[in-house]
View 1 (cartoon, rainbow, N blue to C red):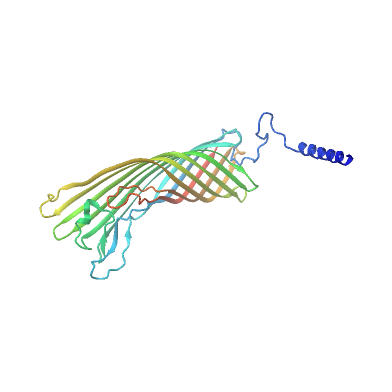
View 2: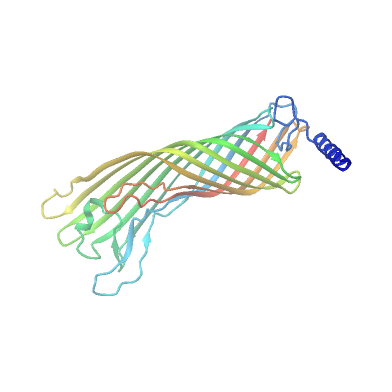
Amino acid sequence: MKALMLLLTISATVFATTGQERPIKAVGSSIPTHPAAPGAGPRVEHGIDAFITGDFIYWTARMDGLAYVITGQGDQINSVGKGSAKYPDWRWSPGFKGGIGLNLPHDDWDVYAEYTWYQSSAINATNIRGNGMLPPWNISSILSLLENNSSITQARGKWDIHFYAIDLSLGRNYFISRFLALRPFASLKWGWVNQDYRVRYLLETTNVDSTVSMKNDQDYWGIGLRSGLNTSWHIDTSWSFYANVALSALWSQFEIDRQDTRTDTRNGGTPQPNTTIVVFNSEDSFHTIKGVIEFGMGLRGEWWFSDNRYHFMIQGGWEEQLWLNHNHLLKTHFTQSDHGDLILQGMTIKLRFDF
């Protein structure tokens, strides 16, 4: 009995000691009274804690599934040399971003809005050089007009893109170690992407000389949720490496319009020569959810001046955006499920000023 009383006394003492070591929480709240991780800013002294940003971007844009012709089509008699799929000549084009933000007094949160503007174009043409050409786009029912592998004498493809986006984010930048800072954020994203695709074939057969053309336009807008993580790997107080990632799911609308035309300069009488006729004219419109993946990585430098009343930052690196299953251009001769991704990537240089 004495042993049992002694055991109970020791147990009560241990539990009482353990209870005294528990952290004290604010009355009526489960939120700690002190921040779990110190804010990483950047913040200035005696300012309004606002900041502006400007980016110069030099990107290339391209979309899967835009081959305008395929060479290497034989005549069923002689062996043919290896051909290839021909795409528009993807180019690099400049663009810009502009942003404004505010560091909030609540727990070092910040709110930031950024606008992206980018436009580009790509064009290419192929003339017959021994290897026959096969059209991946059945423009104006051209497949029914072909006599042999040399019926198409020239093919041309042209693609234009107009890309605009707005990101509005709420985040917190904080240190998780002496030299590593994280900024998780929740965001809304808006996107507008307008694309114009033009393909033209010159056709010469025994009875017909003709030009067939396709205008395939896709207008897109989307709005949805975006979330991600920005990381800063500090070398010292001024220099750091950054690596960012973001994922979005956008409620999207696609509006696609396609028109095929045919102009004969020589034929058997119909259609009337040198008169352009519309052979195919149709549209498609639908809503769906599409995903966007964004990456960025580079080097950053930042400095404070005028007794820490102002802050300046410059960073440069590589950025990539992947808009999943974005190609819904109208097709007439194979399944509509053959989609492709829209890709934007290139150099981004950002300036930031805090005041």
